Image 1 (spheres, rainbow, N blue to C red):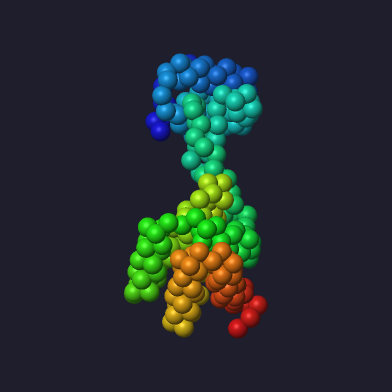
Image 2 (image 1 turned 90 degrees about the horizontal axis):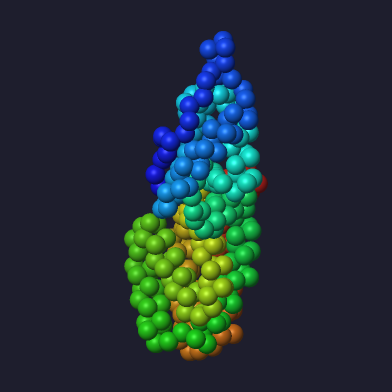
Length: 251
């Protein structure tokens, strides 16, 4: 995304040489800039930060902020937290939604969501996975079992669960799974999961993954669902015990 630095009319400072606090003048200047940017088709353009706009226009930041709020309400600009204010086509809102979920949710909610979703995906995969899907799952299980560090385990674990989810053959359910996975990629969550992987637990997870894939290969949806439910329940106990210890609740 490009950044717009020109094209807006200049504005005068107040009589005392300080930036004036005139929201109407700020709105007029910014509206002209937005209109000029909008006349050129292409990718979204990022506006300069409020402080830079205020300095450039000779108008107080409060006036600039109010003017931007009006333009946003009118749908002429849009904002993305931590990224800035933009003019032009707005991309999918899903990254913003996921970013907000990372801040608002917690490990127990994510594991609860996984418990509701992933056993169902495993059951559907048992009905719909083809031989190539099963071969890929077995290969990923082997890679996960041979992984020698947490980074590799994280990589192959996610790949295995994703392959099972995709093999379920339901685009909407897989989309929900991807949202959960995006939340789980947050660094704080990754660190919590890594600390929950003791040597004994890693061996347990390897056995549980194999049981899930075996059930899918046998085309037994009930067994696949149960095996995934057992796996998520084991993860839940391990991860939440780590979370409680960090909070000083146990241990």
